[in-house]
Length: 179
Image 1 (cartoon, helix red, strand yellow):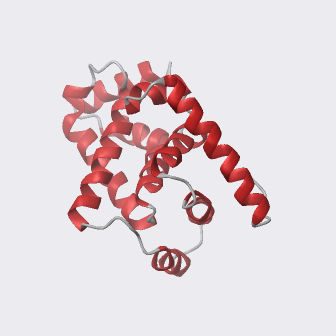
Image 2 (cartoon, one colour; image 1 turned 60 degrees about the vertical axis):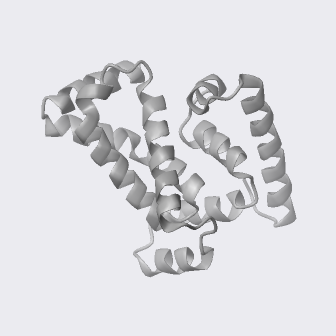
Image 3 (cartoon, helix red, strand yellow; image 1 turned 90 degrees about the vertical axis):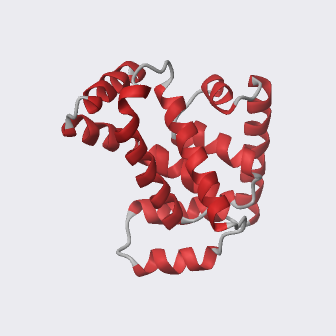
């Protein structure tokens, strides 16, 4: 159902309807931001990637409206854009303290608080595990969709997800955090 709606929205965006772009943005921005954050581990970089992804959506709406899996395409564009940013900056490790300081300097918001918690907790996971957990829990994608999107076997996705959840539970107990 959501996939059909997104195809319709992309068709309207391709025809220049600004309202369709706004609707698609509002419905998918949190998922795209969360996935970008899971890769980059930096709030500001994730925001930049999210904005760039939506610029690509606007420019490529006519081409991608015929894709079978629009949500998968959005995730792939987000992942590729995030990886491009990492290559461009030539850095693998993000200064977490700088991100926290700059977040706290801004007006506090729910998404900023949530991203700090996610960042601290998810830094303990491997990149592949973190991406699968974010796609499943935050973007609400099924394991089958995640497997297809990331090009992994379904059993691998399920195994990595379970392993990550157990590790997150262990970490949260150790640090006395509540999941």
